[in-house]
Image (tube, helix red, strand yellow):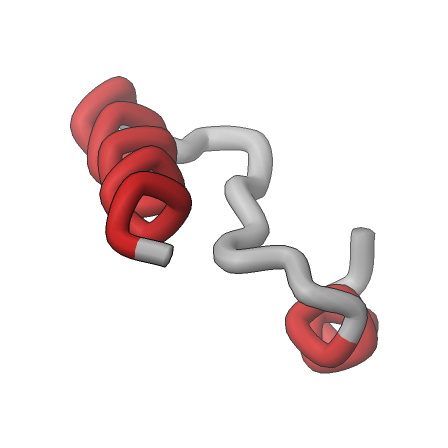
Amino acid sequence: MPEGDFQSMYDAGIARVLTPGATADEVVEAVSGAIKEYRDS
C-alpha cells in the first residue's frame, strides 16, 4: 500500500498501518495499543 493511502486508512478508523518489514516489536506495540484503547473505551 502506498504511504499516500495511509491517511485514508486512519480516517476510516484504522489505528496503525504495519508495512512489510515491520519488526515483531512494532507488531506487538500496535496490537497492545489497540487492545488498551478498546479496554479503555
